Image (cartoon, rainbow, N blue to C red; front, side):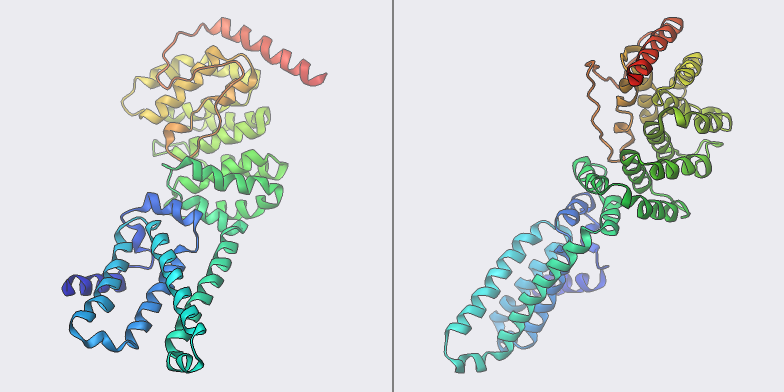
Length: 381
């Protein structure tokens, strides 16, 4: 047991500060959002252990060496390889212990306080520092820069947490557009672009929907997205569609330009985005190229996520009864980006990622012509 405790201590000292996330990254990314102070408190706990061990006399005596050294370090070591959330239970017990020790010393005679001045001071300092860290780290995490950082770190397998963070940014309105835009620019300038943060920032901008937010999305689609090759384009596909959701018909010229300079294998991205604009000319253009989209589904290079994107777009064209239905198709789900916007429709479409129905092009062109003209008339009234 002594060797295990020593090995655990060595690992704890050598591994990076956030090493506990190495094995349980998905779970711990959520824990970091809900309890941003946890890592800092574990650091305080570790420091308190070391100080108490230094001033603890029984450390050199046989059996007690295990209780004063082995058990604490072994328990702390487990925090490296298990979900960080378990650390909350450890820290809660530690807080209770500190409070009991402080209260016991206070309720005794003054001589006892003088004799136990070092442990009393260390315990009181640890408790005070812990509460300060909880307040400071929580405040920082709830700031706009803190929310943006945590938004990009949350695993896509926890869309509920992702949307919780994004909704807090969206509620702050146009005031967060500038920091979101700055973070997006820095992210896109990197050699390797993780798809999570750009798409989540784009989602926030799309939901905010202000002219400034729309301008940022337009610039990204027009200047940053390159579909001239067949590289992985997951974040580009999501951003194009989010721009279409935000700008509507105003996005058509930019998406048409992107379509013209796209590789043949990537043209389905601007085509699917054009459908979501709700513009009649764009929809007719896509309907004229339905055969190309259906051929793409049969190609071996089209992965399941993109195939679902195409099928859901075609289903929206075939079964949609309003412009809102065109934007409601859950194309983001299979991209595994953590985006799960509400895809329910008033017309009750049951979305199917394997949809393979028939499309009558001329009938659908007349169908959407009537729907969109009626929608324009209703808006005018």
